[in-house]
Amino acid sequence: MMELHILGTASARPTSKRNVSGSVLSTEEGLVVIDAGEGFQNRYSAQRSLMKRSGQNASLRPHKIAAIALTHGHLDHTWGLLPFLQTLALDGRNHPLIIYAPTSPSVWDALQSNGFNAEVPEHTPSADLINQYRAWFQLGANSNELGYEVRWMLGEPHSNKWVELNPDDSSLIWHEQMPQPESFKSIRLDALATKHSVPSCAWQITKAARQGVFDRQRATLAGLNEEERRSLATGNDVEKENGITLKASSFRGPERSAHSIVISGDTAEQSIHPIGIPSVLVHEATFLEDSHSKAEEHLHSTAMGAARTAKACGAEHLILTHFSARIREASVSLNEAVNEYGDSGGITYANDGDRVRIDVEGNVTFYRRNEDGWKQHNLTHH
Ligand SMILES: [Zn+2]
Ligand SMILES: [Zn+2]
Image (tube, rainbow, N blue to C red; front, top):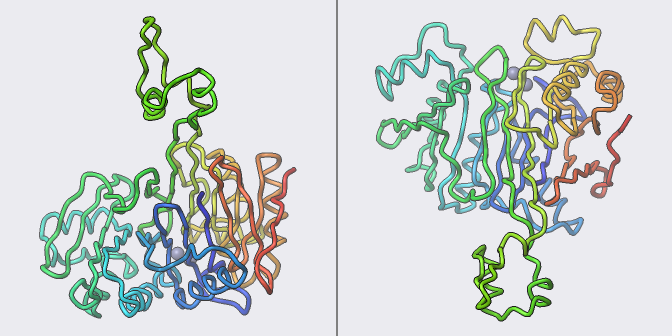
């Protein structure tokens, strides 16, 4: 099961109802934080308390955080990271944490030529994450001062090459592929390049396909002994004395297919190319149709643009987020998106604290936050 907690749904600046970006995805192999705008740690702990109060299991225990994945360096997506890291230290974290962020090709080249302390190329936007990484290192975000190991990954999302910055000894480690969090076995995390005014990516989290469930009853009815059953259950065929071979695969139910969720940062529409078809796409919808030229100019999306993106990548469900402060009712965004999305799947908008769950079979359920907890909410189908 995977469950995304959407903890901030405002764009650029908070409003009375919406905070800036930040989400956490819970999986059985660990938690992934995606973006951490200002005040993220307060929202995280409030969500965790409400989960506990409403009788949900303590799936948000901070020590289960395996990775933090940033979509881009605009401060509404990153300004809460350092305080969050320091709180993890105060909570006594002592196992490694891996942090991922996109950078530009020119920064990549500079690091490759001139090493850890390479001068940042002239036209690099101030919000490139190399600049923030360095500022955070100076402010004490290193393994020595935090007391737990942090692995700082910078990637160029188009070529998907990654370099690890180690502020403790000013060294770089080059990776041909993005290293995965240690605890991940059947879950994987991938960066998908997006189109924004600074280097940016979306994040896709995939639960791998698994073999079907072993049919114990069938094995028993076939009169197999304990050893033979165990052999079939672990995937080994069994040779019977009469020369007949029992295929392990014929004692399994149908394969359980892979499923995934894609969480965009800020991006122009139709810029995301997921690996396979995502069950859920959480996409920014900063503007309404009347401001579509603004969306194009600033490389953001409208609600309709988010719907076109969802259709283009075949996403089964679309969740709209990252609303401009000028949008008073997200239902207006939803109506615009529904017109464009047609009968392509389920769609809704997110409020702060909403949850979307994908169960082991790939079924999607949306939970709308209310005063005392959450209420299951039907995704609009047309
Ligand atoms: Zn933003
Ligand atoms: Zn942005």
